Length: 339
Image: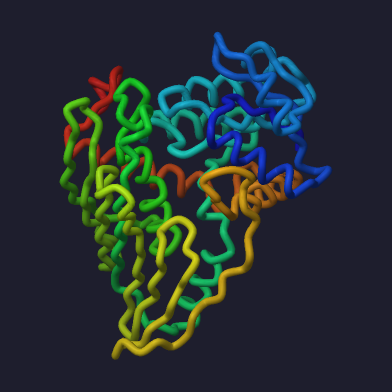
């Protein structure tokens, strides 16, 4: 799988580090390009990308590029994805997949029409811990699942992009895919309703939100997330509640601890998390190798989506985020007719 990455920022650097460590002849860092006015040469030399393109269009004209990894700011995702799909390239798009549900649906439908590979790079869904937890649920360890709590309190206000309404900033698009993605992983896509409250900064982007998601089967999940929490006081946990106990994780996206309790609060077991690769650089994020290995396997087998993040999941996450924004009257430029 020859990858062409468009965008040379932080996330592209992280993934380059992991792909390099995987060191597989089947996952090739083939070429890179970045936004007009910038040069990708230094990025390519640092991480080992074979070619540098002067533009996205030049990359798309290269027949050796199999998939385009979209790693540019949120507001550009739709444009780049559609251009890549139109050129017959597969697409691996960073979270959030698009700015809203309407854009997400447009991209997915375009990929289906062109019959090309398309997936969201929502890396937590590819981690082994997901299947390990689902196995405990399927075995009935905590009984029938009845609800969940997701707490994601962080401070990312130091990042200019998350404070900029023109770049698709805000907590919902930045952190929402992790919280809602985890919710869909464990509770499914059969959502009945969403009830949300949104706080906003003076810049117009959302500072945080809390919302209640109700499922058709009666399961209720409560989520509280913010990007203006007390600095250096990160709080990030997830609890899956059953009739006979609960499963608690010390992080939503990539937990390092996962404990199963019975109904009286006694610890039954601790789910051991496999060792993961760590990126070269700061912060020391881990686990992205699972995403790229799974994507390559799906692409090589001729699938048009990944098992871990199928189109239905991407669409569900986008629909929930759009509904939260609708209730919070949270619009980005060009979305005046969205709701």
